[in-house]
Image 1 (cartoon, helix red, strand yellow):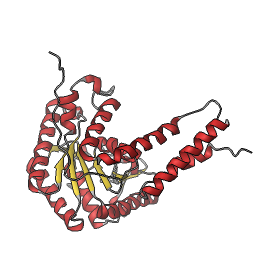
Image 2 (cartoon, rainbow, N blue to C red; image 1 turned 90 degrees about the horizontal axis):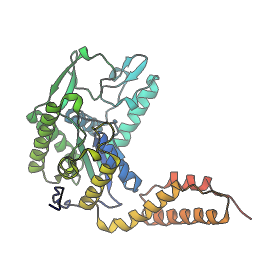
Image 3 (cartoon, helix red, strand yellow; image 1 turned 180 degrees about the horizontal axis):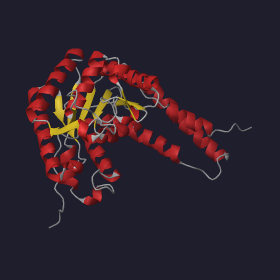
Image 4 (spheres, rainbow, N blue to C red; image 1 turned 180 degrees about the vertical axis):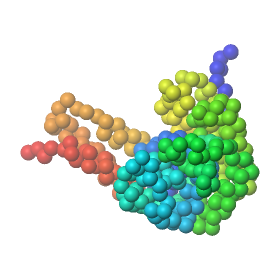
Length: 331
């Protein structure tokens, strides 16, 4: 037996992503992993304007808020242990200063709302069907923010409820942005805190939900990140130390599959140029003031200028600043 793996064909996306595409990522930490890859490669990408989201209900809520451009006020926050939080946001938005918390939330909603109107792709990664509902209000929360467990009811959303909630918000998005392409994926991260059997039931519900939506809507597709992890990689070598999250190697592998499936191959040459610039940023010379290294810096700045002139959507401001700080004027 020569082949010790099971691989499968991943169909090409209906419309290819290129450097002019605007891409919004929503969902679990796996959405952030792939979003980071897109950002590193200078695609115009906005990742999780509400922070990491795991369940379809929270994702639908966040999209509703972006469509309405909701303005959060003090009444939308609560204080817990001296920290202001929103039940609709990840803890990265939490702050000891109430006004700063609100400003951060509303800035991201404004940015996300404008981005969604012009986005070409919306990539949604569903993590779990298990949710926590606040007993006193009935709100399904994005994050419990250390509020005692007794304040919540935990349950698994039914497939029918998930389909209905996502169907409703997809229709609203399509009214606002008719040409938007939506790509669903199910996170390969194992939610074992829910329980091993409960995690499998959850993933099955998410998969059934997504495939019902794909069958119903045009320009709604599915990328099999979950299946790549479970059926192709299928080995604990490809998990991080917690045995729950995919390892860096696994994320790289799934990214390559996504790239082949959804990104225009004509962009690959430019992506290699960007990779060289990223690698150059990591280079630490023994003699930074040497003429050889200064010429190396000049070449990187010239390469950045060339790419920015050909691809106006690319932003190399951070890289340019980093290289300029290493540049010494020589007589």
